[in-house]
Length: 601
Image (cartoon, rainbow, N blue to C red; front, top):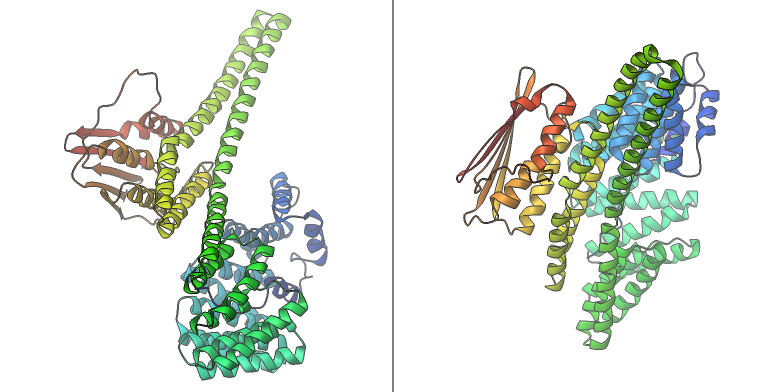
């Protein structure tokens, strides 16, 4: 069944930022000229705008408040692209600069955005902390509009975590301010929010009351999009209360307005189709599902098209129209394959990354060749004495370039070792088998985890360091994917002691090769259930790692001409340059394998 179109409304971020721009002209604070400067750097797309801002920031042409504004704009752009991690990083850099210049207006805005982004990725504590700071600054600045918007954002955050009492409390505070300001637009959205809360706690009369208040304001403002959404919400509530005729009337009103406006909103159509399906009016159910399907096609929403065809298949089966059933089944499977294909296209990004690494390696090789030619020219032109000096200089350069080249080769090896072709082939084979076995839910679950694992590998491979929390999340996704593939033939434990996972940073994908060796080699011919235990402990200036498995053990291969994952791991530790490679110990027997090493902080 479809997700219903009852949403928690909030004032758009762009509108809030325009409102909050008042009073930004004091010395050492953001001025209109600063804002225009940053606007001049923006291009047609968010990606190009981010690159343009990043280029200016790296050139260090601008400093102080202007640089803070550039980070702030980057944070907004990353948010628009739904990359909350990078959005938060940029906004935190902006906040540091705004705080040093005591620009309270932009401090307020930045805290508000940080609260919204953290709420989006379910960081409740961080979200509430930033929003409360935004609230404090807006009250200090006597900006009631910002204060009401922040109360609404807090209400939304608590609503996400089903703390409905706190959500109602903050929503009512926002309503009180908006009434005082006679803010009809804000009141309409906030009344809708309160209706959503009451609907979630089962208080349908109150939900209808506030939806009607929101509708009255929307009618007064002649906001037809909002009117259509109010009618749709009222239709759902009427259906909950068992008033089918009134629900149908509301849905039809919403559909009519959307058609008049040319709005491609399929939700009222699907909701009406759901209602007719539940009341066994199959003919009308089919009619409105097909209209919703037409909008899904225009929106190129593959998942929605797949779901609608699945429902139409069930309708046709109930009507005993087997010819249409076959066609709907074919179309459902077609869009399911298209959706799967779209998800797997992320592999192309991984291949593109490999291509860039190869290009960088070639560039370094060319640089080495140029340096060798220069050495010959200096030998001929200057003589023996100068040659000795230049030879020493050139040797230093060659060593640096060679080190960079080795590092690039190593990164390629790591990339291949983290997501090797055998694992990808086996994973895709498992997906194919589940599709052939007609197990779409299992296939979708496996595909989602597999796609997420590829995304994480792609994201982390170019980073020098990631948080311990990110490393653990990657391991969990890897284990989950392998457990589906191997039908739960092994278990795992990850234990962390005396460390803050969010504040501790380590090189990316450090532990995955040992986990892979245990699964692919240690458990492959083992009849009993396997177990991998990973212990991570903080001790003074070191992080101690221990990987234990009960596999069949292994014997390291020497001089076979191949680069193994352990060789890559040792080389990575050597490149860090802290001598941690000397701490590595590997004990393997028929009872299992234990790997120990540490990293200096």
